Image (cartoon, rainbow, N blue to C red):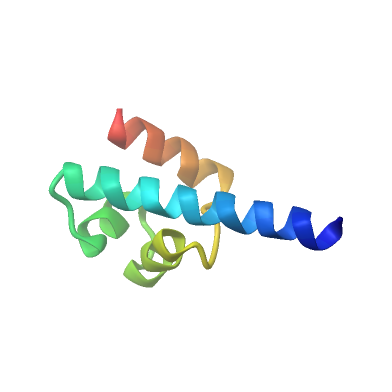
Length: 68
């Protein structure tokens, strides 16, 4: 059961990354430009988009405002 839950969480991370990437591209922003707007590194944005890490709650709010 733990492995199944872990896979579901990984799937959610990947889906969030795809969503961030899609909205970033729709807005015509590079990873660097998005990073500057959010005061993070380009590498952080890349990790979010790849599903390797999760933005903190404050950054998720910033993303939602930016992409609204």
